Image (cartoon, rainbow, N blue to C red; front, side, top):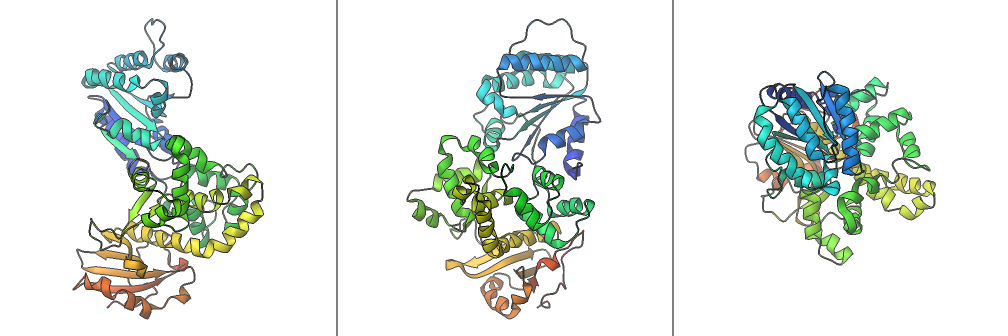
Length: 452
């Protein structure tokens, strides 16, 4: 699959590169695995002189031998003795950068935490001494989100506040997923939604499915659920290193959230233990869940739910991890039956997020979310607010929109509208056929009710 999108990030990386002509610049690229951080860095660097170093799981001395060979391919070096630690490699590159302007990319930088944590202090010391004297465009890439967050954003760590920019590389938005499908001759809204549901826009997953001609619901399901599928153990591969020995508790919490047990009290009742600390770390240290509040809730409101922010992981915990006994015995047909049975309810929740993202991406609304009242009363799938124009859109979302009754939606929104006096309200019934396929803004009148 060719390189798509990321133009905003490429422009910012280019600006940092130009600034590094005068003095060193340090950039961090982080985000979940498979999201395309390395591809982004290499796409940017291909038009410049660059050196790419990968921190693999081997001894520091062997890494340094490998790095020295890579350096010799690009630069003419003075005679150097044996180098066995990264500190000397980094000092050598800083020395070269006093005379030559280039980009240094260090991938999986968090691995030094296990190899030799003192590397971070060494880098900080050398960078502080040489940053203003060198012409180095330094890019660190890391996939273990919790460690990269700790290394660069914890005030107790040596590299705190050393990075000029930290980019959180995210999965593709719906517009980019559409563009990719269009390039492969697949332009229907159902395929767009299915790819969003199963992959969440993660480039690596999309690339795998495209290469295996799996772009329809049935083909995606068949490929994901077969012997030796790369998706079967993907959740474990992504998260066990993040969670360490406590992964079992974290996995149990994520499984419960994926099946709709989204309130802390529900989770604690089922697990029989306090989970506040785990939920806090899942949100703030691992960026895997987020608090979800009614759109008009106050910041200190206790009326909140949790949701998994990654579509693929939500699917993986809901259907693959939850049915791991069947998966481990190779009974994939059973798992498919479960998915087909639950798909209508499950996809309905994802469809709400799908439309919320579409509305947010129009740039017409400063707040987009959903609404409910205590006891999950008067739930509304989508609310989009433009406070500047004093406009509010209230929508119900279903795969089969013929089941939506706008009069009922208006009744449910009575208390919500009381918080927006003077706002021009519009009620909409939204189905997959209403999803815009290009840059068409969602605005009145869609096939919903007239403005109030």
